[in-house]
Amino acid sequence: MTFNVKRIENVTSQNIIATKQPTKGDDTEIVHISAHFDSVPFAAGASDNASGTAVALELARVLKSYPTDKELRFAFVGAEEIGLVGSEYYVSQLSENEIKRSIANFNMDMVGTSWEKATAIYLNTLDGQPNLVSETALATAERIGTASELVLYQRGSSDHVSFHDAGIPAVNFIRREPGTASLEPYYHTPLDTIEHISAERLKEAGDLVGASVYSLIRK
Ligand SMILES: [Zn+2]
Image 1 (cartoon, rainbow, N blue to C red):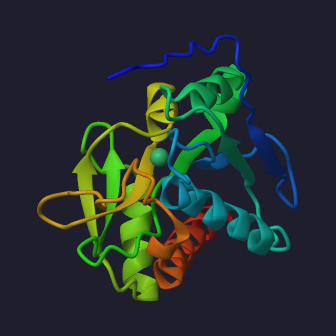
Image 2 (cartoon, protein in one colour):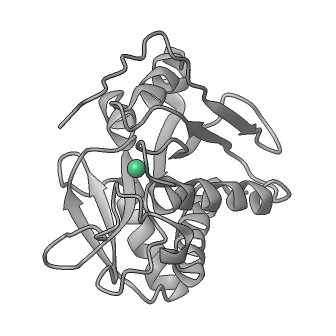
């Protein structure tokens, strides 16, 4: 067996940030929606994480014309797969005042798999404890009739960690198998392609996160 090892140094990644100012007032509370747009080598990354990126983009399109009384930030972050680098940088650039005003982070990572066993939407928090984001999502699911089971779960391993570490209530929304918490078998493989994405589940994630966010930022 022969290995060819190439060392890559000084590579640059990007974050793309979009802000929706409140209709009235400034210095309002801030709600962050985040999704990473990088993937692992040799994987197309349809689920991980074009799914979360696509839902966040759609929410930006829909929410931009609604009057809102809080600031909404969309953080499309890079370099998650090598250690949450993009989200850590994003959060590190927030001023003390912005951190203080930040009330929630809705992070979407792998929200659209069509794997039939992933019937639950997991709400992952760092400490496994409920917070404003998980409570809002549970109440919203009840109100809008989200079909999938929601499971509060203790797990890091995505960009919600960076927000949590700064003291911002954060949840990672992710599809898993209830009970086992297993991820889809295509995870981090070349099979992570659009054939294994469910449009219906993307919509379910968008409805849930969109309605939850709106309930926090609406006038
Ligand atoms: Zn991911």
